[in-house]
Image (cartoon, rainbow, N blue to C red; front, side, top):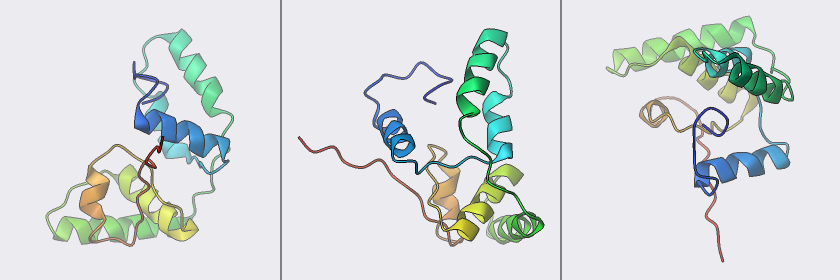
Amino acid sequence: MALRRNQPADSPVVTELIELIREVRSQMIGPVRQELLSGIKNQVQFRKLRNHLRAFPDLEVTSSDYESAAVFFNLCRGKGIQGSNTDFLICAISVRHKIPIFTTDEDFTLFQPHLPIMLHRPRTVTT
């Protein structure tokens, strides 16, 4: 959102992302990198975003992460909750590393009652 869309600079989500990056608390995985870069038609914008993302090394994705993602997928599907393979992979890696997920994708709020994930919300700004 911060790099791909025209978001106001004072958006709480963008502000929080900037703070998480400054605090060295953000992490990246390859499938998220691919999602962020997919569909960008303008090569200048693609290269700009790719270069920004290169500052973040990918966390290793293991076979057990894929297996956990499949378990999470099956569990949620059994409860009538849909999600993408990448979403459940994010959940699996988040659980393994005990890292909260910072996202604007509301699907994760649907997963949360059924999966041992933590969601990170923007902190309240006090004046």
